Image (cartoon, rainbow, N blue to C red; front, side, top):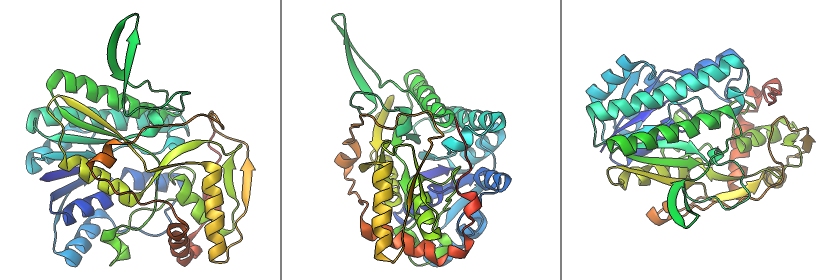
Length: 381
């Protein structure tokens, strides 16, 4: 199918574009380099230099013979959205085009307003574009497990059946976000659910856990095609950050007791989850929700795994408990359901010592690029 990837320059967007293209889909990407601009403004460069999208597209074609169409523009601007949708006429849309970082969204008022404006306006524009230009298209929106928070009951896969005073109804599972970023993701879900009911859209909402990893099948032959790899507190996911800290000899920063539990997945599984969702289209007028993760860990368990893997290559990894800068429970019940994607055929890649050793060895090759002053920024809320 023709698949349009919004936010195609990002940590997940670019690998998704290559993966879908390699699987035979016709792919286009659009991005306005927002993540790169925010990294420059906050002085948090990724571990290694990443070519711009024009160069990435050229490298991909030179290596594989496959072409990825490219659009540069801001999806909060309707003229850009209209141009892209008219030119490409997508049958599937993968929506990554959001400010993706909880800590950045809590940095200050400016960052908060940028997050709200970018995330919600982009989602609204996509909804209106689908209705006007490709009403049968399937929107796959990347949500987050963080929408649910950490309730003291099992987390169902998007929906909750409620019986109240003898009557029954099905509702979206209650959300209780822990940051402004996660709150905008809840608003995305509510916008999509409203327009699914009103206009009969087809939507899959992927409640994704934190992603880790560097390598995908499509990058094995050319490291210039690797995704962004941030290791700072603002944009670096926790396990990626811990791996860099281990190589740098910087103690792993465990917030509080380290009992915060989340669902994690390898970047390879993200690509497969998105592809499986696209290739198994839901019915018209359906909001299908999958909880997208493969394993749950506490932060302390992640730190111990990194320390164990570090020993394999001679690293003496220290763990340091620091005051938690976030308003969150440090010990809590956490039991989310995640069967939908497994039923579609997902074959998980689990977090093993070997996986972590490969990451540590790769980061070690780029050790001279690590700036310890960029790791911990003390964003608190």
